[in-house]
Image (cartoon, rainbow, N blue to C red; front, side, top):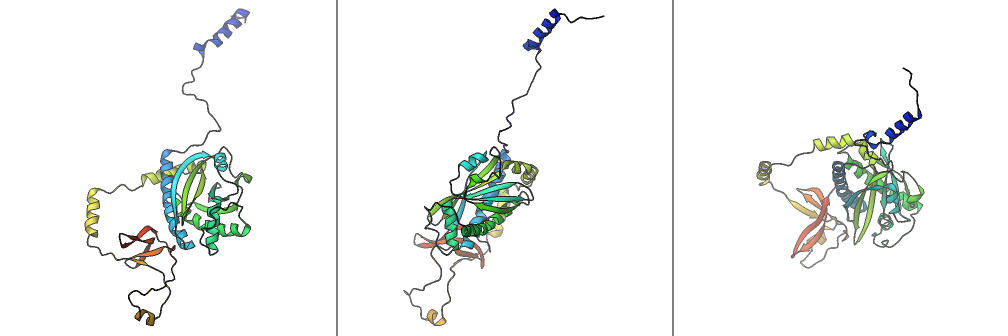
Length: 317
């Protein structure tokens, strides 16, 4: 049977196509924004927080020993923002380093407040690091070289902290004063920003680490394995057993000052009220020994007419 496409049939087909009841059901379809942040899960955020808590704890010990000054690092925030927001939040000039994430091709960024960077340089050159708190200027070539060596020590601690997830080697590629001159990441790319408070003597500064979210998501399976093998909390019976075993353990705690040598004659002639001059600056942390082995670095303070060791951090040789 031959069918002709008349004007009436064309009009009817157009009416049917405009009928909302005949529209295709797009159940579950939502608009997609290709510029949105590549968010990472809350479980990964908790793991990252744990990793960098270990990082700042180890860094406090290693840099205190390397710089022979008491320095503390504290993790204060962890957030996800775009790389453009991260760059806009940096001062100019500043001290910013680009970090390779081997064996991957991704790049992370670490930024030191200018006053903090110059304080590190002053300590490395023999000063106390307290005269650069208000200085805002670009770092010189010599200062850049000194800071690169210092950051390599920081990256070793960071690599060690990340070993609980994967064997990542953080490597300093370059150090500059102007973050806006180098587009190492796309402006819309999401980054996890870890803000770390640094206390050096009486001054407080800030250090920020930005890691691409896509790099963290690439290690999703590693984070899952980390969560599965995480040790469960010990039971009350286990804690009681350990307490019973340690009850009779003998622990000798000693806080030792690194002193210069004195002659036997001087030692034999010391009388009550005499003062011995020791080669140990007041701002240098003391080593705390447990049963003769150095375990902590801390400060000697007087509390209620008794000497105590405060602000102790783990000692690393």
